[in-house]
Image (cartoon, rainbow over all chains, first blue to last red; front, top):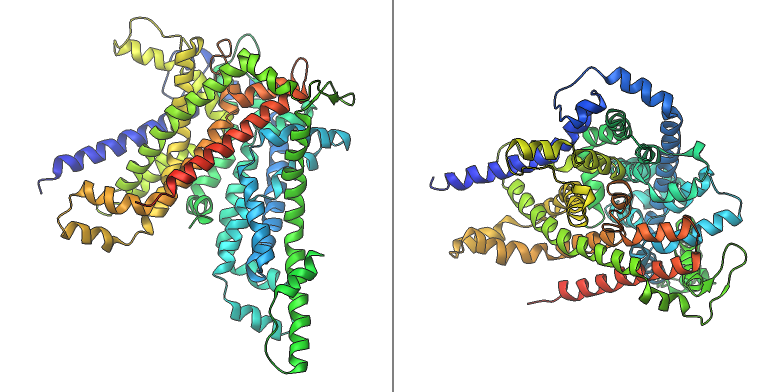
Length: 269
Length: 315
């Protein structure tokens, strides 16, 4: 083939892109095991300072509490989001009518509302309700997203109506058709949706930062961001915190990569 | 109220009297069930998006603090203040810089990578895809901190440049407005190119290969086939990714906060970062901050409208 040079160029391009993507991650992992001086000195091999960094980080910061807060927040956000959005998406598709389609169009408009434009009134609302620094205040604005509703509406489209008809003849209520028929069939969609909502909630920074005024409730991204506020930054400790904050999402990503890809693109197919 | 009108919209089946009555009631019951299924999500979206958006609009005409807010005098005072606010102009310019430089480069790069990875004759496709997609697993604050460390004056990037003799003195990346913005753009490219690539991959997989084959049989080169057959079919996806990226870039906050701290001297600060400062730091001013937030809202809406207009054009 005469196209060999082009092929080589393609592989070089891909390899460069992959290298650029992986290098900062490698740097993060390796630096978590190095002292601050070694990180600044560009040491790119694993060092022996991991234990030291761990003890420094855990004495300076309450990492356990932040990991706990992030987990509680991300899990409750993901679970509620899945429940509320899937039943809505199912409702829009299975019982669709002209009015419901219009409502869906209206809800889709909120995808265009930047969070910046709702942040201040949301903060004032929760402040008036005495809910600042509470779990419901962090979670409530993240539950219903038009994107997820759309994703579940799309998947409900492929759900056979014969199953619903048969279940109705068997005397199942509409709600139990949803829970006993639709939910188990759509396991793949749920997995995809769970991955994206968990990751979005785990990584969310601005809203938790605004509403969790009490520092004892801070999340991992908030903890990471606070590590550079002093005069001297310990880069080894900083990279360890960054690594810890990324472990759960990296793990989910590597295990459920396919679901993740399907999740982010699923609603637009 | 809406429930009854919706039930009326469902046509009754043309059967005998009894059947029709039964059909109507069951249709009505089904429609009602449908509405109750939608209710929680709709209620949440109204309370957590529409209502706050409306409230922010009202707030943008008010002034004062906490419970002692009053209407601004004149009522448009917050908006005229925008014209004299140098920091606002700076953050607006910064945000647009990120938008204009980063979004096109990222989308082209993502498209090229997706096309390469869609080629079934390429080896190790899964490996390349995972590697390029992996940055998406890291939070924005986390990667900002990694970039901040790598680009510090005595950091790894300068060491590498010095070792390769590409520079004879360390560059103060984050201490200079131009280079600080550049680092943010690099960070954004790193974090989001793989994400967009996955969208293009999904779209490419839905393209019928025979359409491209046909073009090639007609004598089109690889590039011409790509440009005239593949790209038009990808247009809806390109439009979608363009709107999403524009939307995200206008709302940029984490990078500005954690990577450069907006510095030096607001040189890399984004509008959302400024909005946060106005709302929750020093002397919080919810009224003026809401006016800034409405500029962000309008920018998102106008840019999305323009992109839809351009993207929907048929040739």
